[in-house]
Length: 166
Image 1 (spheres, rainbow, N blue to C red):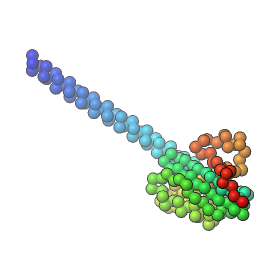
Image 2 (cartoon, helix red, strand yellow):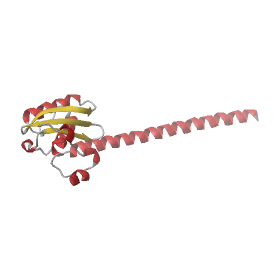
Image 3 (cartoon, helix red, strand yellow):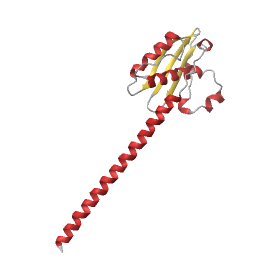
Image 4 (cartoon, rainbow, N blue to C red):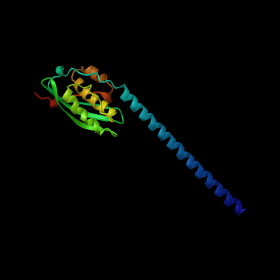
C-alpha cells in the first residue's frame, strides 16, 4: 500500500510539472503573439504616415512644439521659425530602437527648408517620425481649435504660445 501511495505522488508531481510547463509555454506564446501584433501595428502606422510638406513662408515667427508617436518610435521636437524660414529644430525627445542616426534629419529640414526631405538610410522609420513631428509642430499653428480636438490625441500637434518670439 505504501508503494502505491509513493507511485501516486510521483505521478502527481509529473502531471503537475507537465501542467506548469504547458501553462508557461502558453503564456510565452500569448506574449509573443501580442508583441508581434504590436510590431505589425507600428510598421503599418509608419507606412501610413504621410508627409505632406508645408509652405514654411506662411508660418508666423515663433517656437513650435510637435510630436509624433507610433508606439516603438516617438519624437518630440521644438521648431524655431524666423522671417519665413526654419532656423532651428531641437529634438526634445526621441524614443527609438536603432534610429538614433535619423536625428540628422533635423539639420536636413533646416538646410532644405521643407519637411519632405530624404530619409536617413538605415533609420527610415525614425526619419519618418521626426519629419512628422516637425510637420505637426508647424501645421498645429494653422488649425482651428475644433480641428485640433478632432485629431487623435497621440498624434495631435501642439503649440506652446508662451515660447513665441519676435
